[in-house]
Image (cartoon, rainbow, N blue to C red; front, side, top):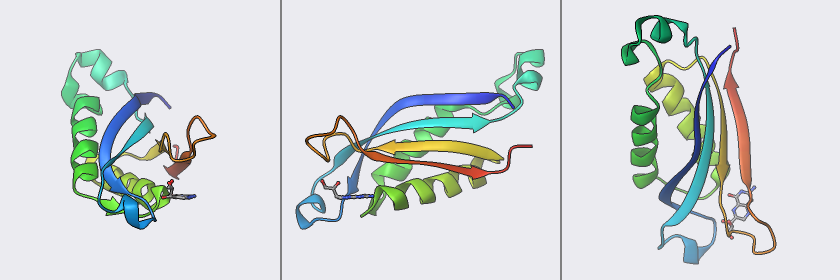
Length: 118
Ligand SMILES: Nc1nc2c(c(=O)[nH]1)N=C([C@H](O)[C@@H](O)CO)CN2
């Protein structure tokens, strides 16, 4: 199956388990692979026949701006469910990274896959 890609998408959100994290916004960096057949869009050269990565990126930014989860796990799970519902995405792989959360690591985070590849 083909994929539409969104890589290195930076968003600002309230995220974290500790008290000091509840009153600040922190940066998360997301990578997404969205399964879709790109041939109909390519055949017609028509954005309406594919997953619009600009619209999806805007949706993610809005989701982050209005969420305040403790765990990156929860952020990832809820976002994956929202995107699959809103954009009829059969399968996706989503990485959510929280750079700077662990000083000794270049980054930390989670990667999930949801849905079925047909
Ligand atoms: N698996 C996880 N571990 C931790 C998380 C998390 O979201 N998932 N969060 C924290 C803290 O919020 C941390 O990011 C603060 O530096 C700790 N471990």
